[in-house]
Amino acid sequence: MRMKFNKTSQLLLVSAASLLAAGLMTACGTDTVDFVYVASSQAAGTNNYGEIDVFEINSVSGFMRQIPTSPFPSGGRNPVAEAVSGDYSNLYVVNKDDNTIVQFMIGSDGKLYPQNTVNTPGIFPLAIAVHGSNLFVVDTYQPLPSCSPASPCSGSVGVFPLLPATTGSNPTPEGAPGSPVANGSLNYWPLTLPSSPNDVILPTGVNVLASGASLYVTAYDSTANTGYVFGFSIGTGGVLSAVSGSPFAVGVHPSAIASDSTSSYVYVTDSASGNVRGYSITLGVLSPLNGSPYPAGNQPSAIAVDPKYPFVYVANSLDGNVSAYSIGSSGALTTVGTYAAGINPVAIGIDPGTSHFVFTINFLGNGANGTVSDFEMSTTAGTLINTQHSPYSSNALPTAVAAVPHNVTP
Image (cartoon, rainbow, N blue to C red; front, side):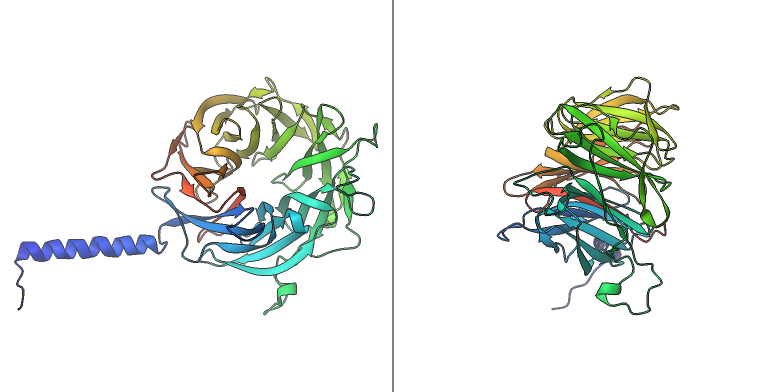
């Protein structure tokens, strides 16, 4: 039997076919603005071996979905931090329980390809930052035999040079461009108090200025209710030198740190006091901003500064929400609003492709999984609204996030 169609039916079929084709194109990522990498500390049934969920963000709606081959193994146990290279070609994942940093090359489709693994100088790495040709890692404790979990001492920050992109036309995994390389002349710098060298100083976060001039590490004195920011100038080859006045007293328990795109201001969350402290920067030295500290929620755990628009976003882990702020001409913060996220947000990021979407990584999600909350940001007001279908499911116990733009040259 042969079915006949009139002109109206034919037009409807053509329209349906066009919509289907458009849907398939969108599903294949033609409208993808970013790839987002979410580290989960424990994948199902893997005995603490982590995984990396890879999401793509739709440039129009902000809708997030995992790419077809996601997730990818993190290359170790308990991944807790991530960073990307300045050219967006490499992802670096810190596996805390293995004391390792794993380098992945990022494909044009967002897929991850493991390249190299190096051990960190100290014990239990917890934070990482990349700028130019150097990778900086913060360890909870200094190296053995000086320190151990049973006999703790202060943490440290270590430096790894990165191989340049011109290394070989067909590099081996050990020689892939962007690989962190151990260097005997660049070991580590202890985070100790000159006035109280025996106090145990435990680091919590790290930030490198966009200018590459200075490095800052947040930490707290485990024997006293005092927080600090250690400031270092970055010399040739990544050599660190303490800036004048470092460490700077900062609240009670600083938990995260971020700086603006002009390298003029640094903002630090204090999880114990529930606020954000702002500082101006002069030759690496930090000076409190007018009105600082600024109120946040309960137990702020992560902070992000928009690189394009004058806004700051803080994830409040106990409240399960995000505090939004606008940045004034002098760097001072003004509260914009508070927006519900998922349960226990522990990391926050802003899409690098458009600086238009904000996402939080929620450690406790629905059932056995964690979640990712996704917001669309008003570029004029800094307010947030949830994107369609947010939050999105991730692997269990997500801890960290990083993102790269799709088809964008840095």
